Each structure stands twice: as C-alpha cells, then as structure tokens.
Image (cartoon, rainbow, N blue to C red):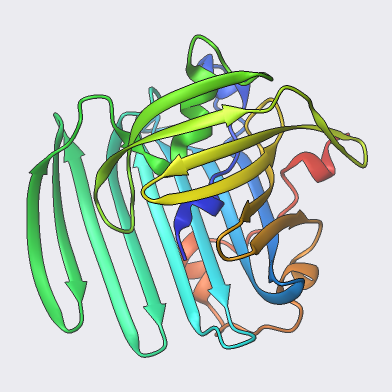
Length: 256
C-alpha cells in the first residue's frame, strides 16, 4: 500500500511562519475500503516543532480484513521550507518486514534498508527540487499558483517506500465538489507508476482518496471507532509512533 493516500493538511499560518502555538496542524482518522467493504484505517498527524521549526508528518496504516494483513508507519521531517531532512518507514505484509531509515542533505540521500532479512546501505543523488511525497499538497499550496481549480503542478518527489525520486504531475479539476458543508478540490495525481485521486480543502487538508486500479478508497471520519470498525492493534502502538494517542479532532470535520 503506497503512502500517497496519506497526504494531509497544511495551514496558511504555517506557510507564513506565524505563531508556533498551533503545534498540531492536522490530525485525523481515515476509514479505508475496497469494493465498498471495510479493510482498514489510517491515522495521520502533521505538526510543526516549535523548537526546531521542523515540519513533521506521522502516519499509521493498518489493513486487516478481506485478505489483507499489513501495516505501514511513516515519520517524516522537513524544514519549514519543506526541504526534506529525514524519514523512517516501516512496513509489514504478513510475515515480511521492510524498514527504511533515510536522511537527505544537499541533494544526497543516504538510507539503511532492511528487507527479507538483509540490510543494505544506499547513497545516491536526488533531484535538487525533490521533496518528500507526503508533502505534495504543502508544496502546491506554497507554489505561485497555489491550490485552486483548473490548475496543474509538475514536480519531483521522493517516494518514501522506495527512496526513488520520481517526476510526477497533479491536475486540479475545473469545478469544486460539494460534500456536506465542505467545498473540495478534486485532484488527479500521477506519480511513481500510480494514478490516484484526492478531494481536499483549499488549505491542503485531504478529505478522501481513491486509487482506481485497486478500487481502494479512504475517507476522513469523525472518530477512531468508525475508522477501525473493530480492528484491534496492540496496546501502546499508537503511543510509540505518535507520542500520544491521536484524538483525530483537528481537521475540517471539526471546523467551527
């Protein structure tokens, strides 16, 4: 399962370097389905560290129904200008495990990858304009065009699960999509051999995602129970990844 569906939210206050009091910028739970059947959930948090000024994305995915048995977690850090710094990625699929610990500096990526019982080290150059793929909509919001209907954005990004820096494109539809009280942009992305769609606010807050090739969908929901639908995770897992158990209440569904 690729992490592209984990792309989240960024506030205008963050981009302008405003007050650091709003440390958590986005936090939410997503319900994941395939062929209209529940298969798992995603938790995501985006935050700005008031001390280091680093922007951090933390996410956890678990698929555990209808033949799925997999988890993914990502902890990624960039500068306030969204220059990539480092990330840790862990994925399990059945009994298989893959971990990546990577750092990026001066257009060079160094990584230690553990997979299939073997460890290898990678030292490679990346495109000077490449950012972490989980920061895609932040980069679009930060660009001259910004996030608006009938616009396009071409980019280079590092796919966290493969460490490849790849060219991609995003196309925003001409019309907004209305979901309840939300007015959402519809974006079609092509990146790293995958095509997927997102609905999101004009602040880059993702409401839903859809991958046509697999019919996998994710949708932001108001509470953890609705996202998990009975899927259990060992005690302490979310605390270890996020530091605290996310409440999932800092997102467009809770906007006053």
